[in-house]
Structures are given as C-alpha cells and as structure tokens.
Length: 118
Length: 110
Image (tube, rainbow over all chains, first blue to last red; front, side):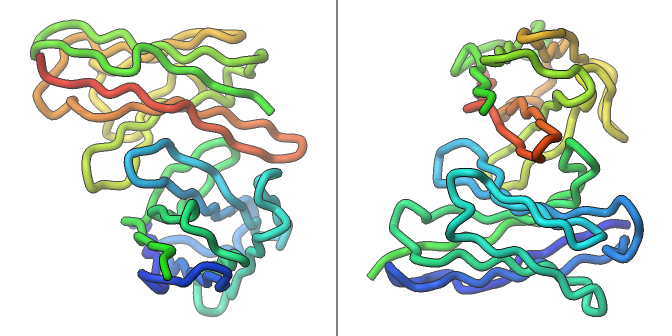
C-alpha cells in the first residue's frame, strides 16, 4: 500500500523560506522509474504542479517558479523535500506530494496547508 | 506551455443523469498524456482516468474518457450521489517534463 504524508510549518512570514517534507511508504525512490512531485492548490483555486524528482536524481521545475524551488530526496528515509524561497501571501495554498508515474499522479498525500502572513 | 480550458465551470445535474465534462487544450496533447482527477471538499485529488480513456484502479465503469488532439471529454453515464465533486483534467509534456491542470469543473446537485 502506497502512502504519502506532507509535513512542515503551517504558517510562514513573507520573505521566509518554506521547507516541506514528504514522507512516503510502499515504494522506493531507489527503484528505476519512481518519481515524486509536489503540487499546490490555493484556497478555492486550481492545482499547480511545482516540481518533480526522479529515482536517478533528475529534477524538474515549474517554469514560472524554478528560481525559487529546490527539490531533493533522502532515499534512506523515504523522504522528498521541497524548499521555496521568498514566500509571499499569494503562495498560501495546500501543498501536496504525489507519486508520479510518467505523466500522471497516481497516489497523493493528504496535503499540508501553508499560510503566508506576517 | 499548454493551457487547458475546462467547461462548463459548474454543471448542475440530478442523480441518475448523464454528465459530460469538456477539456480543451491550447495545442495538441498526446492521448497517452491526458488524465482526469476527482476532488471532493477537504480531500486530495484522486486519479480517475489516465491515457485519455483508461480507468484507474477501482474506478467504476460509469466513468469514461475520450478525445484526441485538443478536445477531451470525461463522461459519467449516470451520476451517483458520491460523484458530486470538482473534476480536473491534466496534461503532461515530456521534454522537458511539465504538467498543467485545467481550472476545474464543479459537478453539483441540481
């Protein structure tokens, strides 16, 4: 059974850096073909893909946010970490991690709501 | 970057009716890279359909997908009470990898 869970601060101040951790089970990022993505959703709005990391440590980012994002993995802990710099109130959203099978997100975490406010 | 436009924004139907949701792309999408998700309030999205017309594991056969090129459709043959939710289409571009979602269609009880 595949599970994913996001963790991190619920509240960050403008200009701060956000660090989110996705802890997963039921698969390994050592396995060829495995990938994990981060996706976010502002309240009442649509989904937005942010970043993806692959089993071979390839990393891909949203064009509009790539200067602010870093994705990394710790295979020994079954974790993927996303950092986003220079947070702004418009970055207030629920942040999801998801197992990614090529072009689709087939398993999702429950999401972590992050509010950006002073 | 491919933009996905979903219509209608809101669809009001009664249980038992047929639902037809549209997703139009700004440029041609490979059928193998078009998916649909269902999201209920307070929950994460759930994969319904991948590769345009393949149902994900455990998805009832009242859900079906079709389309090609720039026009794709999700159909629910007879809407059940548990189907009222928001539906998103999503496409994948492989080089370099990027993913985009539509803005969603809300299926609500009439």
